[in-house]
Length: 367
Image (cartoon, rainbow, N blue to C red; front, side):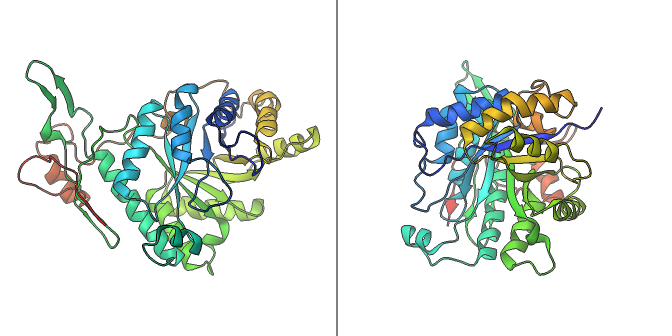
């Protein structure tokens, strides 16, 4: 049997699409993706004034109870947001979706966005992606800062948590400092799925500093890369380079335009999806008219792929990590079986935790 594809889709509304500011519009699109048994949907976001669109994270949190299996991956920029708040918000999405959350890292590169906040001039793109890498590191530490069994909810003693199973994260970086721990329990997935967009040009020898920094962030922190490549040859070269540098745990999905106005366009997309030797794990579909195009995917493209064994007939797991075949990571602060002191173990292995006198009580953030 052929190896099954991982498929996802963007549900970004066209600029003049009626209902584009209504959560119900996005719920309908997500349900179409779910009918097609796609792994996840993405919703783009930024701090630019145009196009007008809803907050991606809030929208996907709103539609989480209206869907059952499809993963929900909003773009959340790291440039003018606090990493503590971002990690908490993505964690909350994981809870309300019962383990289906992801986070598509974004950065804010325009003068207009810098002026909107008034904190600082726009920074070079490589610096913005270095900041994004720090934000991803902080989020992972904060998601790990509650051990899985930290909640005890002992009504007899009135103890809600075991304070010994909450941990300071003690992050000190160029852009911010975060002590932790989180104010929310560990996410259902352990860590929501981190996704980074990468272009094939970012991996070239003459890549821009921003492109190289984006790749470095992806190599270190991404569970999924959304790869933009101009043709099959560039896709294969870029995917091979990413795989060599990151390992087999990374899921690489190549972006494909999915404008499907007629059956001829559907046949072309199907040929692209069933091609061999692509070097990628699957594809991220970018519809032109989401309702029309995702209907075609659900009603005709997905059944054709299932007939060839390239697409699941149904969801076998509950979480986004299940869909992607990714293991649930253990907390870096939790003691392995038979180990008495988790903080000492992790200080030796990852430099991620720090011994502290007393148990953590308050989250502390300095920017």
